[in-house]
Image (tube, one colour):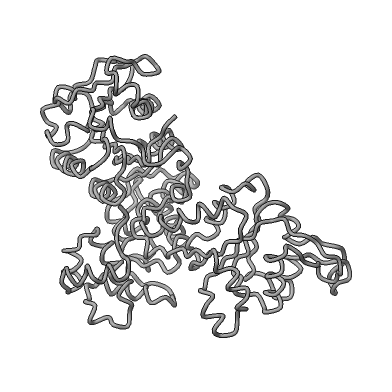
Amino acid sequence: MKVLDVALICSESPGFLRSLGSLLAGRCRLMECYSIPDAAQMIQLHSPDFSIFDVRSCSPQQLARTFAAISNIKSGQAALICVPDQLTADRVPQEIAPFCGIIELSNHDENYYDLAEEILLPLTAKAESLIDPNKMDSCGSYDTVTTASPDALVPADVPTRPKLVSHPASAGRESHVSADDVGSMAERFRTRTPELRTMLRRLDIAARHNVTILLIGETGSGKTHLASLIHEMSLRSSDPFLHVACGALPGELIESELFGHVKGAFTSAHADKDGKFLVAGNGTILLDEIDVLTPDQQVKLLRVIEKGEFEPVGSNRTLSVKARIIAASNLQLQPLVEQGRFRPDLYYRLNTLSFTLPPLRKRMPDIEPLARYFVHHHAAQLRIEVVEITQEFLECLLQYPWPGNVREMENAIRSAVIYSRNGKMTADTLPTHVIDCISGPANDPSVAAFFAVRKGESLENRIEVTEKDIIEQALLNNKFSRTNTAKHLGISRVTLYNKMRKYGVFPER
């Protein structure tokens, strides 16, 4: 069955998003949001093939903003989900009528399975249903209306299923990718950040080959999760995935943990022990914080990567490594090479397939979806009912630079869930340092850049911070509006455009 490239769901109801999203997952590349401004931004950045707007509780002003967001769709379809008799054909603007359909769904109707089928079938069966308007779908339960007139927005009377109307404006539009792209690294990592999505597409290709990969990223940015995804998307997914935190092991025990040892190799070696490389078998081993390895240990690791061979501590017997190696570091390795702390030969071997995971403060579009996910996850774990996530709560999260990245934000949200009252997530439930924007220690200058941009300081007043960091942050804060960003930074639009071109800071199209 042919699938969509990208589908967008916008609803204020977490239950609706969770239920419908789970049914559509795996059949299209799915994005979710809770507000019309977010939907408008995602339409601009990602050009979804199909956009679903739940307008059942929308005010007239919100409905008008929904129409405005839909008008920016350049090559896709849209569906408005409304309660019966809420929306009539004459209320849909003529400019969006050719590619916007109506689905009627009661507020009490939880039959989302039929809704998911109704959304997908007209799209996956374009070649049949849109060419022949009288042909029934595979379930034989509805007709696909293909006339472009406004009257075509009025759905046929099918009482047992939600009612969807399709239009011919999309009949000639084809999906940009095949079904093989569904469940890609970028989709499974659930990121909306263009820069990160581009990196994950390259990593998606590398993950499917038997090659050593290096992941660079700050503590808590998601390297372990990303390594797990690499393993799951490889041919080794049915074999073990082992995580070795080199930084948590005493230096004298790292070799024993990795390569194993024989009885009597050292004082406490009372029996033979297999190392992680053997235990991993044909699976994947993640070597986290490899920057803590000594030069001698780095030499042995290089031999494992190059030749797949090693000897257990205290043994002369050479063993073979069958596991795939993923190396990770919290620090950039090149400065360590220059300082003589990391071997150049190992660095150049690893740097061939090196991927840098941006910190959370450079992934602002990811904060809200991650926050909503953590709220619902920990609310379920702690058996605490959460019915509303307030805008002030989300704004507070966006105002903090998160030097501890995703891990720090998850811990803060878990705490907030515990202190929530009457099922509401409000700003005052968050830790005080998040509310007061007092961040912990961080070596990266982009933390200072985050606060500089929030205060509206111009580029001239922040020469000690890189322009690229400030420009990226300001663009995200101003939803990629160049006019507003230039005004925010105190420079002209021409200057901003030239700097964006210089640093390659452009939203994904």
